[in-house]
Length: 436
Image 1 (cartoon, rainbow, N blue to C red):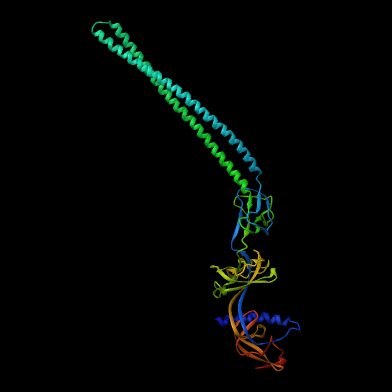
Image 2: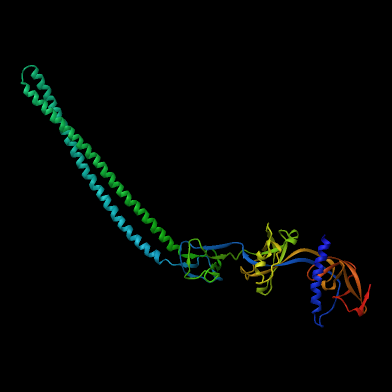
């Protein structure tokens, strides 16, 4: 099965190279020498430079953007990246401070009123208590007088009318004592109710004050948080959103209304950059964590950095949805090919690297040393057999060969060609051929 796959791949590459060979100008050499060397088989994929850690700048409250830094601006920790409008919040804060002043006055009046009520109630209760005590003394005196008169009457020393008068005085005094007792009870109850009402009024004003203080603190915190600062050093990048009026994705802009927890921007940590790319599903078994990767960044003058595969996605996805697939030119035909997303950890963080740059990742699948190879253009295929044309004086001998591994440039020759022999790149003219 492996040989069939190699043969099929080789046939496709050979066809492509055959077209290239036909388009060469006359100055291009049409022969090459079979020689031993290193055969490196690799796959190349497009990818994107990304930061491993990103600090997101989130909107702390609903409002309007006053200023926002341009994407790509270098910021230090603590630099202001976004300012939100706080004019309405400041006006509301001033109103709330005035409201708190009125609440303070109301609270002071409630406390003063309670103090007056407590003093007044205390006097009323003390007065009612004194009146009750006096009534009880009078009742005791009248009661003793009645007892004395009843004794004297039993000895016929006083008339019956005196006893009746004493009984009448006793009834009157009892009623007065009962009345004074009820008055005292009413004074105590009224004092308690008045005190409770006063304390409730104080508690209500205290609660109003606490709520007002909470609103003041909330507005002060909003004003303080209206200047969104960079939590780390890096490059500020504006967030994007879909503009339904313009029917396209646009960056956050000054003057834009935003909601709480909207993302306004991000600051990638430049100290930890990786490459996010993908590999074809046909090669997923040949790539593992730790596989060597060479990364080339054309935008930086073909800067080359090395790295290793640090992550392989567990689920296959459409190539068009992969990091490299999203970089393909618009309108390119969909392939439907499945790929696995990978992450490449870079060995050295070059200061020229920036998040969002396009990278070309070359993942080494295998490496063989001291193997005999010929250029891919030297191989022709017929009936699943591979041939080369060996130069013999001025003639060319077609020779069947056994091939091994291959990459986009050379093919390993296992048998059929010797080291140092000259091979023709393509198919020589019939008049120059010697069919073997």
